[in-house]
Amino acid sequence: MKAINAIVAALLLTLSASAQKYEPNTKWPYLYEDFTPGTIYFESNEKSAADLNIHLWGNVLHYIKPDGKIYQTDESKVVRVEIGTDAYIFSDHKLVKIVATEGTNLLVKLTRGDFDAMRSSGGGAYGSSLNSSASRDLSSLGLDLGGLNNPELGLMLQEKHEGRTIPLVEQYLFIVGGQQIEATKKAVEKQVGNAREAELSKFLKDNKIKWKREDSLQKVLKFLSE
Image (cartoon, rainbow, N blue to C red; front, side):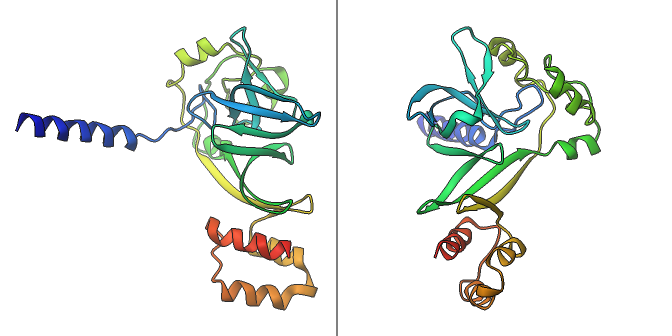
């Protein structure tokens, strides 16, 4: 019985740990719970390995240097980013996760912090010192965020769990022929125009497309790529 009780207790601890979903906060405003080993691919065909994370203010790429400080990557030189098993590209100056591909066309997902919702529910001062440009933008929201102005990782880790939770919003996008298109019925109808209006209508009906589901959106990507 003691052995059985020990096994049950271990299972309960495992379930409890898995149920605690990571939530970014104003002291740790990153998409990932930890800086994760990854690779940055540059337009010069070079690549660099580093511990990476995505800062939710602007969805920009941060990495750690040997000096223990956090820096932002110059997006103009980056063509692809891999963080763990996830792959990203910059689109409209934001890092978006690649969900599916059809040739050179993509279905991507943008996960951003809903800072407007935080403002409407009440602000407050959180985080470390900020650069002046970000400070001006954030002041209108009544929020301060950590992870800006080359902060030290050690200090951020000390305060990692002390901030206010940042709600997240997910948005799917198509990138077709280099053009970004919202993954909504209205945006896709506008993209195909009158020439394929009837064809699109039949396709959506036959495939029972659900605009919130990735499997449905992958089918739409294939349609747009034909």
